[in-house]
Image (cartoon, rainbow, N blue to C red):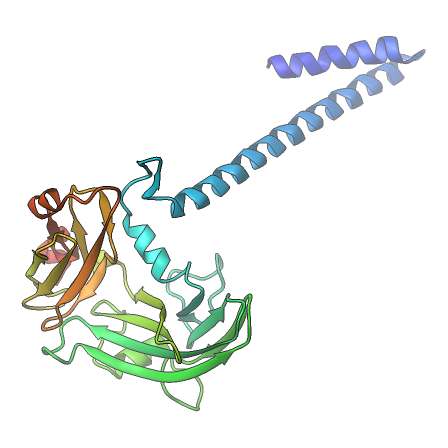
Amino acid sequence: FFFCLFCFVGALFFCWFGWVVVERTAFCVCVYLQFCVCVLVFDFSRRLFLSTVGFFRTLSSFFCFFRYGTPVNGQVIGGRWKPLHYFMKASAYADVIASCGVAQAITQDAPSQAKGPALCYIRNDLGTPVTANVDVQLLRFNAPSGQEQVTLSQRSIKLLAGGGTSAFFCPQSTSQACATYEALLSAHGCASDGSDCLMTVTVVDATKGLVYCNNTLPLAPPASMRLPDAHVTVQATAGGDGVTVAVTDGVALYVWLSTQAHGRFEDNGFALLPGQPKQVAFRYFGTPDPATFKATLRVEHLQENLAAEERQ
């Protein structure tokens, strides 16, 4: 209200003293035009201010994302890594990334149940050429022990120096057209809606053996997943600088390690299979505190946070 009043009074003042207006009609037109100009200038300034603030907020969040746990003068900036940190580090923020989706789905335009052939891509953002081994697998939640993982394809792909050099491929090993997700899942004993399987895409440097990307792709919302009961155990190392975590029965998804000791685990939020224990190192922020690490160590997973009826 006050701004509109200010613009109106300013328009009157400008038209009365700034111009020699003889006719009433010309005066009214002048006031109207000056009022509109004032409003447009204000709206542009407001949008420019908000855009600038939003840009710097995004930029600061980006840098803060990577400064978690950085010691400065003996003090630590930030805190423990959250699930998003681990997921982004293993996938979207990797130098060489691979992922799979639906070929006909376009960002923000795809329907809730996108249809079409399954299609994967790999992208190189490094400044050097890359020869990568790409492994696409399905993880079946309710398969017999030892048969949970099914390899869909293994291939070697050469990419020129980045940024953004890309290549596309089918998730399955075939020289024909890419299959749909429904056909792909049904052929390997999974439900057509993906509720009892998930897909993983791993990218490894062919010469150095360096794991660039380990992208976990859920095929259904967690609440819709049909997961088995799983009992997960965790044991700290003698020096308090890591753990050994294992599941005794069933596949455990999004296994999460936590402790009150100040630091972060090397990996977290991962899937765990029976008979395949995983060793995870712990990086301290500042002075190591093995006593606190061991006393407050805990583990949880997705099944513990879903009701039994949601998992069946």
